[in-house]
Length: 404
Image (cartoon, rainbow, N blue to C red; front, side, top):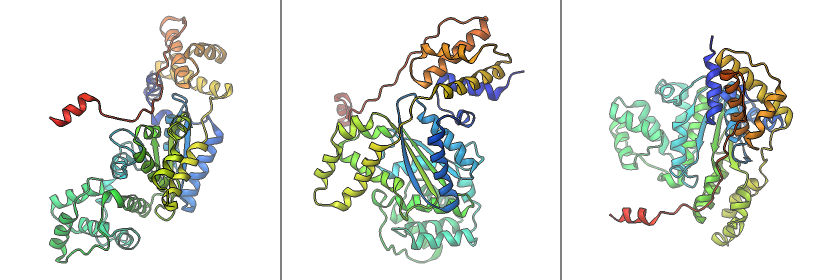
């Protein structure tokens, strides 16, 4: 009898593709850093304190696996989790794009699929949650756009308006003029903004609003996990500094966020290749020479990135624990009993190089050969994935296409 859950685990490990299921079953490694993360989750869930953290590591050493482990730990604490990998389409210097992607990849506890709008639709206009959120939107945010938008969302019976307002909450922001028109139609009153909303300036309002909403829904907090943070290094100089400024909202939250833990995963070479190699501290002084207020959050982020704890290679004992689990899952996945010692399995991983990911794949290939043929030769797994921090720039062909 095959164990399909075990087979899913083995296939995920074999492919090297990060998996939440793998994070659930392989969570004992690196106890020191996991204890610190667990303490920060407790601070958010139990005391309402928001904190942020950065971890760094080499390619293939388990950064994404650790994020998936935190994902499962947060859900077990009844916390909402949002997971995002930065990319060219979702750069950290444009917070409104980050918000949109995070909302699309937000998971409620005990849910396998992302999304929470189905819960939002259950909130009635006269409910305590609605009343609390309207007071919060009117008094606690930089702008009061979300007060008018959420009140309209709760009271409209027009399906097209409902769709438009919901899309705004998901990051497809509507203009001020359409919102004013909708609000006037529903309530017969004009909209009078205390401050006009601009997505490039006031996007943190949406993070704060959703954060408060999750707490009102009864969840214990919000965990924001951001992978591939090193892709900031490919941005231009000014864009990188703006990205650091945006990170400060999550790494050093003041009153903007409640019960939020944010975790960024970064390449171990970022400090040397980008912060030192591209002279980020000098760039900061050059762009904001007479503005200490503008320099302070960026400098704090740079300091944190330089000092971020690095994921060290697993100890021999930790590797043995991982391989022991892999052997157990492989046996359950294919209905057999591997009869070899951990020392033999460890020896089979030497051909996999130094990366944890390739060691795991080498061990699985070794077990595959034993299962299929009763014997195994030498395995060979290529190591790929060197980071590059060249700034993104269009090629000549791309520039010619843009002018057509």
